[in-house]
Image (tube, helix red, strand yellow):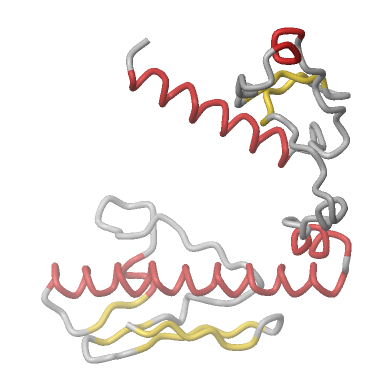
Length: 181
């Protein structure tokens, strides 16, 4: 095998391990340590293989060889990498906060799209302002096909002028969102 194939194989194995760990297919701390082969037992100077194959409860995965436990005791429990995701899903307050942030981002994105298309419209048509109705529609001369409100905000009153530096939209559920040009 050439060097690139070996590198690609290594990357594939690492990605597979990470995906298996993220999906919770195995817990490397709960797997038994692999037994030493008779060749390794007979020759103590021979290095252990870098990877061994162990059978997990849900799938077989390649994992690094398990090192012996240090004299001072087992390693401390690793920090929970998915603590924020777990908390977000289980805690209603955090879930509402995440939903609110998502709405704010969607409204900001709508403003960004309208502002960019308005600037392009004003440049193309050599005019000093652009309204929602100049920009949005299914016609071939429209710049945006549609704008989907996320929380009942109304973009139909949207008008932007050439010298304007920011645009904003309001909704009862999230207040006012402003996008700086």
